[in-house]
Length: 208
Image 1: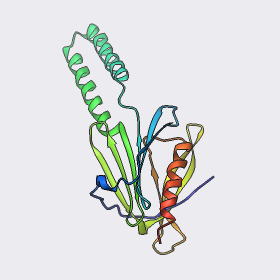
Image 2: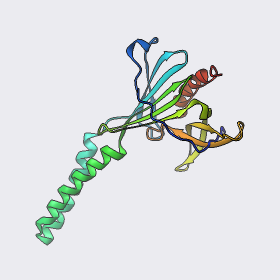
Image 3: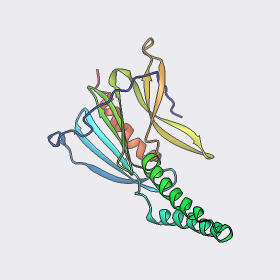
Image 4: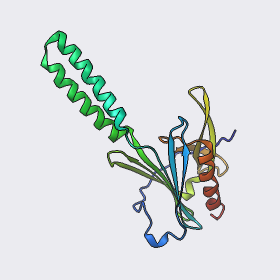
């Protein structure tokens, strides 16, 4: 079991999510893995230099079949209630609930891509891109990072693994102040995490 820690940290925003094209010194590698639910995910690795790599985990797009099933279920229930109540407000509410539910799902729940950009001289940038196009980005300075580890946890009666950033305690260099879990939406399995972990450790080992 690998376990690790962290501290209170301040996130700074790193403005350049993608490095310029001339930094792509190595070709991109794309591999297919699966998440803890058995769904296919894709890991894209871009090695910009020996001290800078970016890892992007992509989840399946929103399923049209699931959207149609959800919509039909809500509307069938609405028509069933309308049959007994003869209240047209029921049908209007069904349409409103469907639209609002879909908007909330793609804007706050459905994550299409999660990326991890590791720059040995600066730090780590973590980004999440939602189905609506909304993106959340945070940055952890290298001086606050103690290590990157794979931690195991129990989830729904099974053991799963997380890639985590351990944050350094300012007062004690050997202490951990906090843990920042990565790829929380896509939840890759261990084989995918190990690939990312090894590349991150290769970069961290070159940091003075």
